[in-house]
Amino acid sequence: MNFIWNSVPLASWIISLVFIVGMFGFCYFMYFKIVKRRAGYIFVSVAFVLSVTSFLFNLMYSFILTTCLTMVGVTISLFANLGDLRQFLANPFKKSQVKSSKFEVEKIYNRELLYKTIETAVINLSKSRIGAIITFEKNTSLADVIKNGVAVKAPVTAELLLTIFYPGTRLHDGAVVIHGNEIVAASVFYTPTTKPFAGKYGSRHRAALGISEISDSVTVVVSEETGRISFAVDGQLDAVDQDNFLRVFENYMDGVSEQ
Image 1 (cartoon, helix red, strand yellow):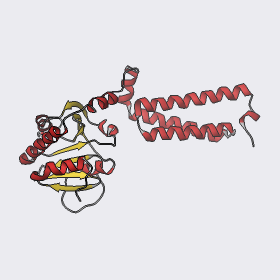
Image 2 (cartoon, rainbow, N blue to C red; image 1 turned 120 degrees about the vertical axis):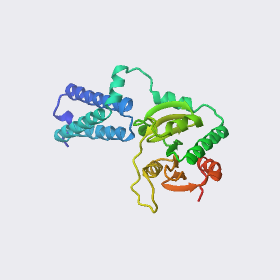
Image 3 (cartoon, rainbow, N blue to C red; image 1 turned 60 degrees about the vertical axis):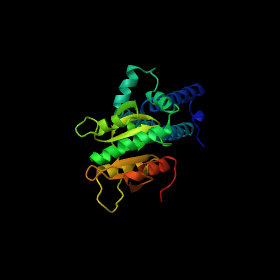
């Protein structure tokens, strides 16, 4: 079998191997600091294994192809996250805002008071027939989804939620994402579900189902046309009346099925 050390001087192939490791280490670092997607980490890791294997077995064509494809993939990813790249280049030593936000929302809070606040806001939205979509992040991180919205980072209050969703305001389109007792972001747009289902449902309901299919979040939807309140959980839509909202909401947040 033709290994690299059989045809290349020891110093040369060791230097080349160190360069390869450094190059992929840089790619992994850029994904970690900027792209922050699990698929990116897997892509770089697989490409690194293939490149090193090709190099050690002296499969130069395979090595060159794998390395070039990796560079193209990393470049496309960085251009797709150009805003995050600019922020990183402007201040590469700045601490991650996502981590600090995570710390803030993990503080102890009055859960009963929070749930009553949500009930007050949702019932007022329903009575006024103001369309709304509110997602409560649980174990599945929604950090990648939140990127397309507007950071809020404010305590949950009924008044703030009513203001955000009031027609004509800048943030009323899209969803509000809540983690713990903090409104993390507003005007967040989800990929709607492609699943066909009976009944007439608008874009809010389809978006709510879409996020429930890829996470364990609980999403409350208020219909703009009818004021109907629904929950989107685990790819299912469940309508609920105002009198039972708090009970059903608590059950879903605690992981208790309503079926």
